[in-house]
Amino acid sequence: MIVQFKDELYNQLLQHSLQKLPEEACGLILGEHSPSANGSLFAHALIPLHNCANDPRGHFELSPNEMIPYLTDSQNPVIGLFHSHPTAPAIPSELDLQTLWHTIPTYWILSLQHMHNPELLLYQIKKAVSTGYHKLSFVIGQ
Image (cartoon, rainbow, N blue to C red; front, side):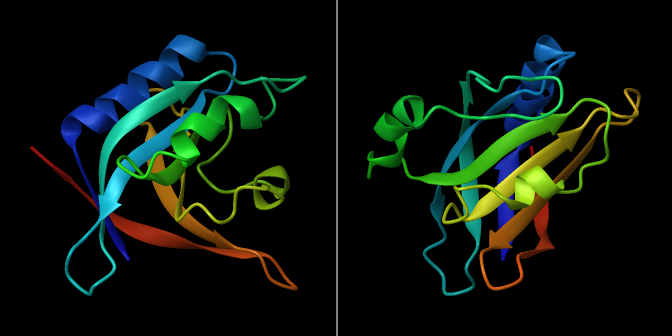
């Protein structure tokens, strides 16, 4: 699976994450499936959401009530769950792997560990007897 999105969306992810420092930023990614059979996704928008975790500096938690309007909107499907790691690499943590939102197609993590070189990685998380993850390819266009 390849995820495509424009520079503008990446810049929104970065700005939202920087504004929320030292806390983890979070939100939903809206988009659509490619009409071709290759399974590509096109991401169009970031919906910033409130991090309601007890310790928002160490992890993120989304309110299901805040997400429901977006999860039920068939005109603008949710294709990704986004959050930042202010001081850690862009690798899913144990808490990330315990997400209840594993049915959302992609999982986006922006690391600000090296502020001069932010790192965005996208994953697909599948629940199974043993939860795992694998990195997804993505393309940022003009």
